[in-house]
Length: 149
Image (cartoon, rainbow, N blue to C red; front, side):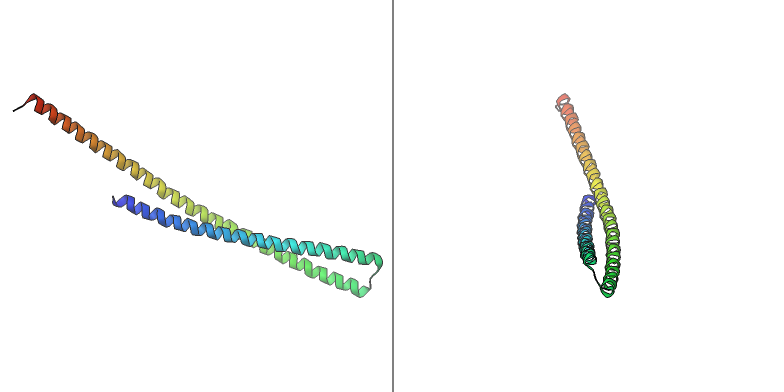
């Protein structure tokens, strides 16, 4: 009986570990989603700003205004590149968190399989003992019927 309770304890611990890994995976997925939203906002802002500048160019702008536009566009491009790096790093963290969760899940399933095998073995032993006791009882009953003394 000690083996099943030890396996039950291991399964409980593995369940907790798997749940924690799943929470961590969820958190990293949220970070990726937020980073992608920020990247989309930056890209949309850059596109809008470029369109406004293009409109201004058709009506005519000064050299200073055009230089300011170029400097600001470079800053936006730099910010977009930085945010793309944040998204990329966050996706790597998701991959790592997913690998950890999968390893935890696999470990848990191994313990469940071992517990299932132990349970089947215990049931097989109990069935064998019951059959043995029934056979012995039948043999004794048959012996007493032949020798009533």
